[in-house]
Amino acid sequence: MNTLRIFLLLITCCKLKSRNVICAKAGISIMLQIFGRFPVKLGMTHLFIFIIYSTNISAQNPGKFNLGSAPTPEEIAAWDKDVKPNGDGLPPGEGSVLKGLEIYNLKCIGCHGYEGQYGPYDQLVGRDSGKDFDFGIDRNLKRTVGNYWPYATTLFDYIQRAMPQLEPGSLNPDEVYSLVAYILNLNKVVPNDAVMNATTLPTVEMPAKKKFFMNE
Image 1 (tube, rainbow, N blue to C red):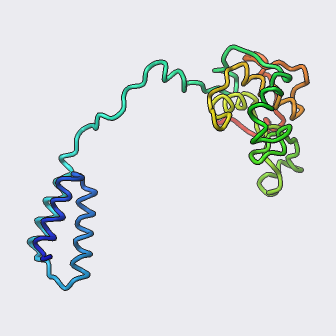
Image 2 (tube, helix red, strand yellow; image 1 turned 60 degrees about the vertical axis):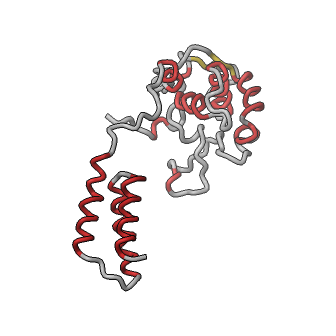
Image 3 (tube, one colour; image 1 turned 30 degrees about the horizontal axis):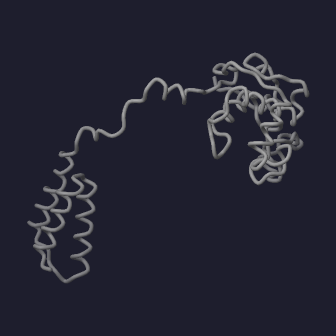
């Protein structure tokens, strides 16, 4: 294959397939590698024409690609579920510790283990934080809901978005409140008869709250 054929092949690929400056730069790189490998001299005029031609391809990019569609109000509402530390965003509903135990054993125990401590994935229960919140220096300390999370409302926010792992977002508000009540109870943060809802959950004082500060 002679120099002219290689030259024509590269600019045709750039013109027909990609139509963007990335391909133009790649084409130049490939061509220089080819000419560096074989004892073929590339005329400066040919190289100059190729660079000018290929960089002009970027001007042919479309303004938009007509992919996807505008989200519907229902689709936006399905994702707009963020819960703030003060409880803003919590939905109606409520759940108890006992009901949370039932749901946990059905949908959570496989990953997080018996009573949130003995599973293959994140440990949920534990109050030990070392002598002075020593997570940064003691790698044996496990970060759990009971010793590290500063806000109880974050637990609701995370569970409703991401859990269970294989069916995220499938739990209704009552189920999430129940799981929150159960996990907080395991961590000795709320009593056995605790009922969590949009009023009671924001009032829960987490053991690690004083270790974190809100940005002003």
